[in-house]
Length: 345
Image (cartoon, rainbow, N blue to C red; front, side, top):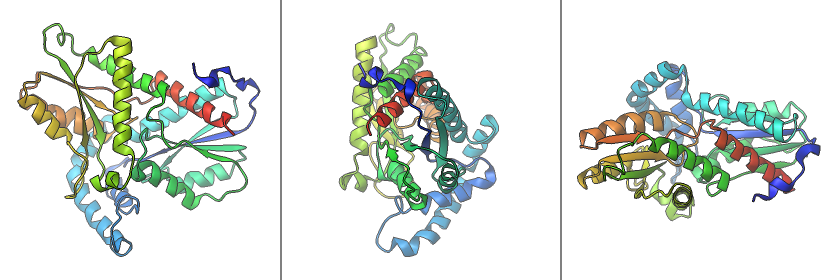
């Protein structure tokens, strides 16, 4: 049983600011290129000898080229979701988490969203939090597995703008193996498996494909824990699924969203789909294991592009587990995580 359960938060009266750190996404066609420019000029992503001199012009070039390639995908999402699905989902997560914290902690809790590459930008949220009186600030990056390119970058950006003023500042750097989060993942997968009514009974196994956002391979070679934590999240999710539901499903881990010609983590999602189709697989369920919100990488790369590829190769049934988004289990998990963290002074 979780130790926070035994704590009495009914007398907790501190004004708490929880800041959700997330990637962000363009919300209009005009925002695509500047969003990508902000992304590719990030020193935690573009880092090589003499990068300080080449980063800006390189970011402009890559952003301009990349914007043309992804404009159609983003345009479809803008029309379907009336803006950025990532931004909308993160806002709903913040609203739901604030309600949960006010109900279980105290009515002084506030939850903010700070985006790394698009509005609301981190520097603006730093100013907004600083303009109010809070007794404690807690940073919660919405990346379950730590990488210097995601959590590390978001925390670095916060530090660049935040001026310590005596208010205690705490950080949750990862939650890849946090039991309530794993439980939320299991619930999403169990829901998605209901789309395969003939799977096991027909003798055609449903295979689980755990897909994470890729990163350059040299990062893990230099010690970045991201792929090891993706593997641990996957292992714990499968163990919990077997415990609760007796899952017999074989699984694979793969990576997606590669940009540029360099070496990235392997195998890729498309390679994995091709291999499973060639092996005679008929039922694939893709689980976006490193994403807590649906956005272009899930709604277009997986649910659209990967699906079309799978069906063209003879896969009979293909589905994607919905992102955690603002599922009650995920919001409860984040609230518990916050309460555990602030209890450790």
